[in-house]
Image (tube, rainbow, N blue to C red; front, top):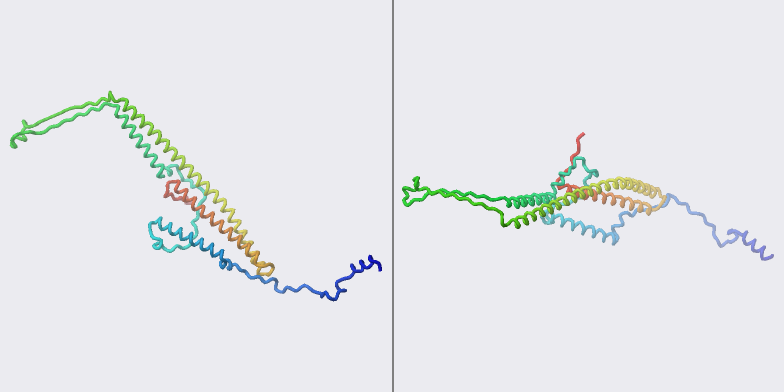
Length: 289
């Protein structure tokens, strides 16, 4: 037998011609793949404990800051319980007027400086006019007490004084010019305060609008992540896959929840900034239908 024939014969041989290879068949999977969820095992890891310690430390610092804000000891504060964040309307109300900005402390102080500068200018201007003073005095004088109230005991006195600003006009003009400059400077500061306040209001209102749009999209993504999580959990229960897909879907769902919570916190901060920009103490009034 030639070498080529022997090679072809070897190729035609199957595994049945070799008795030392045992025939095997796939094992039947009854009940599918058994998987066990380990979602609660994260808190037992050392890095999870470290992260929890960091969060607890941050919470303690916030309690101290809150106690300092209200002027009380941290132990005197009432128990703090988690509560949902208040809902915030992303649109600027229609009843907002520029008069609200006038209640701001910086704007009001700037307006008072303008008024004070104008009063100083009027005072400096009044010094250019002549000053006429008339003084009158009447009294009684007598040696004997019995005649003190008689007509002949009277002592009248009258006098007049005239002040003419003839020799100090240079000083008066310099003072008046200084008051003019003070008025101009105070008006410029007031205008800058009003423009800065209006810009801050517009910035906070724009931030609220952007956060509202982002929250709408984030809510849709959260709903999709929840459906993917439920679908992964169903596949695990049916034995079609292991728990890794469920854990990944749960992690994505928690991340979406955290992102939505961060947006809600940013909306509350922007709403507080808007109220502060409007002068504080402002509450939205909703029109009744």
